[in-house]
Length: 171
Ligand SMILES: Cc1cc2nc3c(=O)[nH]c(=O)nc-3n(C[C@H](O)[C@H](O)[C@H](O)COP(=O)(O)O)c2cc1C
View 1 (cartoon, rainbow, N blue to C red):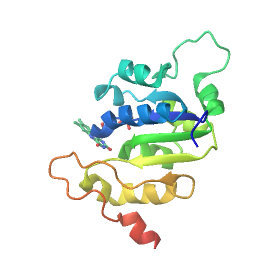
View 2: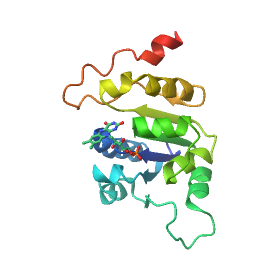
View 3: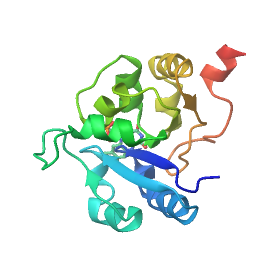
């Protein structure tokens, strides 16, 4: 099903960033081509070298990095993608995308495409319960598939898989 599918994987700066490594391995094993975009914060949690090795390709981190190709990276990546996956997605990046902000390579690539997009929120329960975050998630559900909160690693976090406030409101 994923054979030859082209996935742009965005990794943001949450504690669950390490899970993107396993996700990438799974996608590659399933036959997908994966190109990785990492935010500056993501690189505090997992290295581009790890992601480059696992994705078997270049890792994109800088919108303004000179390239030898005519196409700008965000346009080339947007055109390449059959689908865009953001995993993990921080509250910050969810807010930026929901607000139409494109101030780094990941958010600019998201803005440059209309492909199927999967956003995987991953944050502490208290952050997830914040009403602004919930409104942003609700807004994104109009344009993207938004998964359940995926991180249970934060100390003090209660069950992260309980029904989210946005889902309750959407019912
Ligand atoms: C140790 C640590 C863990 C963090 N974990 C998360 C997290 O799981 N989810 C989240 O939304 N933000 C988390 N943050 C906050 C983000 O790193 C911060 O909002 C950052 O600006 C996100 O940048 P980005 O969205 O461009 O990647 C964490 C911060 C620190 C210092």
